Length: 271
Image (cartoon, rainbow, N blue to C red; front, side):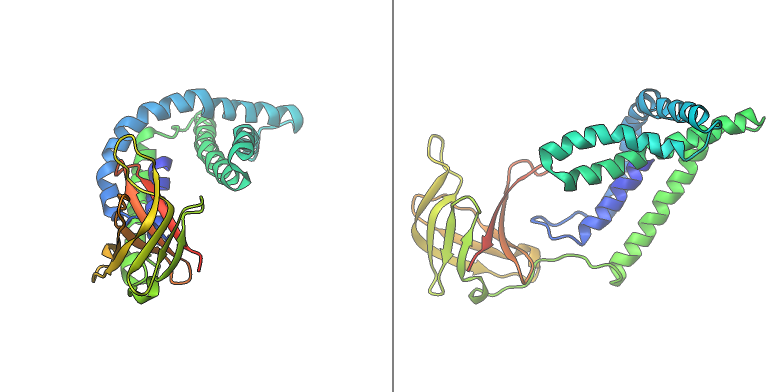
């Protein structure tokens, strides 16, 4: 249930973030919940046995060992300490920003069910019914529904900003664009385009970068997501580039490959 809730929140957060592709309606996510639960419950059972219960047991032992009694705050401390090890590996590989996010999410994901397990054990020791799975599913489902209702209301009433590419004209797109890897594309006001070592979709056996001089044009649309820049250069199989970024930091995107995990080529205007 925590995973479902986290993915739901991520869908709403993505609505306000600049993206090379139009984010899907969070309502589609609701259709995925039954499948997530079907495949997620076996994973949750394994995770409970391999991670959650050991964390709860270790937290109880440390509490009795160092303070003479078991206390709830040992659970998040132990979870944070154990998650810090893989987070440190990620920090050395991908940088501290991503590692901090993973550490916070994983610590919460382990500590929350461990605290519920602790509460269930304490209730049983006191002669009361423990926390049942159906109770977790019931309140978890209600929480998912409430978050969806609030997020949908905020996104449709303007309380939450929903990203859309800036509306452009051909004159606003003139200038030099760079892919950050040595490739540039210059779009001139007279419709001339000049590419230098730009990535393209070559025929089999050809180089993945090309250059030359050709023409370009902007294709506007009432839907800002459908605005494209069409570039034609001999010997360059250049795709149509969609307009993205923000008014202060324009970008051109080309998306290819698997729609569920696409490759995105980006050009940023440098002057």
